Length: 284
Image (cartoon, rainbow, N blue to C red; front, side, top):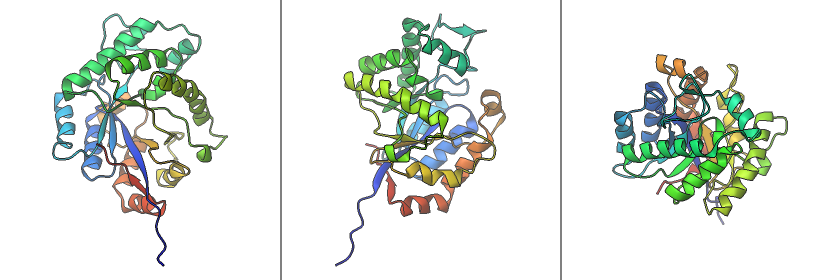
């Protein structure tokens, strides 16, 4: 008798930072239209995000749903808050990541301004897309930080209860202990998952895609590792894009975006999925 191939694992491949810069948004739209990714997370607080970018993205889902659309909550510089009276800020901008992490860990953030800012970004998403997001996550994993997670999950429970949220714990089989950054995300995700579950909010079962964003990183070599042990419904975060002046002004993660974009556009990517018996989940 013929050997039965097991059903493929269905995963989410989510491109972060839609709206960050025109070259990032265009690359993400191209990958969605070619069915190379099935989710993107929208940075509504980015200065370059506008109704035109939103309409072009929403159009890709008009005949059938090709991508889940999420809100990429942003609370770190150099971006600016959408809400009035946000604290802490410096010269009208959010603080940098390390400063926010220090304050959050010391429990020195104020819950109300955090919640107000997350609500403002959620409202903007609903304004431009005409519906709540399918899921919510955070730029630089800010949604996992102490205090931030409480505000974030409370807003989701009250205003987008049907959405799922991103936790960043790796599958047990995919853990490399020497990966310091991923280990921190594993630990932060424990408390986040516990709180989400208590509020009845769905989370992705496992997470991958974090790597050291160094110029010599070889994405095509890294990607198969992300699939290792990833269960059905697992999520891989990615950052494809084409570098432009707007992106350079906003973000240090530049040339690697082009490497990711090239990989996802290639036949090699499809081959890796086939070899690992993995398929992209169908957004509903």
